Length: 168
Length: 168
DNA sequence: GCCACCATGTAATCGGTTACATGATTAA
DNA sequence: TTAATCATGTAACCGATTACATGGTGGC
Image (cartoon, rainbow over all chains, first blue to last red; front, side):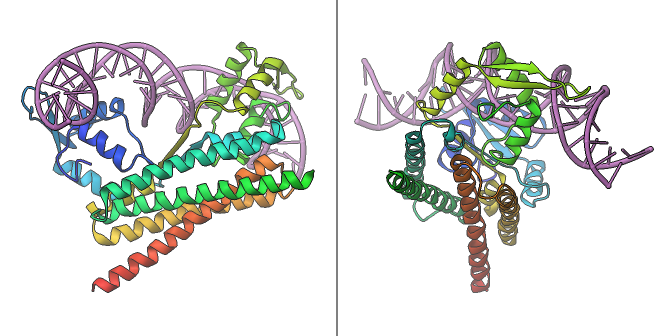
């Protein structure tokens, strides 16, 4: 985020929430200590620039930081990929509950995915078409993927309903 | 997992790796201490059942455990949903690298998703059609979702290649 | 005899969240 | 004047991973 331009910790938090949040979140409790660590390592540099009487530290990338970034961008070690989806967990164990419960769980999942989809759409409409290719691509993927999830839930709900009536 | 039948910690680890791993992973370092905590809370009960000279503790659900499970299955608090995808992170920041890098990143992502898809397919072929509906549904979703991701990467690779040649 | 598998566990550490504390600035 | 926003930070805790340590069993 700092490589895109000089940033405060606060800036970074806002940016993350408006861009990478759906596949990589961050909290203040993570950001501020990390900024200190990165500065100790000489990868970034903080400059106090109070705005009025309000404390403010703007960070920028050092040459070392830039080359560390380039290393990471250039790839190498396998890419981390992790998902935690409690809805799916509930669905997995749904054979342990009464039959109607499964349909309710899928519906709950659908609501969750739909809410996420709405957030991503709002983001797209807010940022508009003047986005750089990188952020644009990740947003497009997020929109497509989440829409797929909503559709899957819809189809599965219908299938479960059909099966339930067939069984009668 | 214990609700599906009596299990050792080792059993649980194997099961998780063969079923929920793609949306909810667990390690020994998490499982064994958690079994102790659940027993302290009276939700499960461990019975030492050595197999030969090999130590072995089989756990089963108590009535309290069963009703705690039912509460969770019945829903309530919003479902946790978290993703960490380093490939997407790299793609997001790809405007900071040279143009060709983006294509390489998308390709790397494709390889990762394809590997995951292969694992899920192996799981399906292994377990076959005699799966209960819950596990079957989550596996189907995993397969569909991961296939969608592979397709997205393929399409995006083609799009980026086309744009690169058009620009010349 | 050896290797894959069964089986249990812990110590160190990590990455991260939650909740709190503080206070200035700006726009309605 | 008051609410939203800008801005920094920490303490307590949590959930989890990694790496290690140990040893028995079963099949080739």
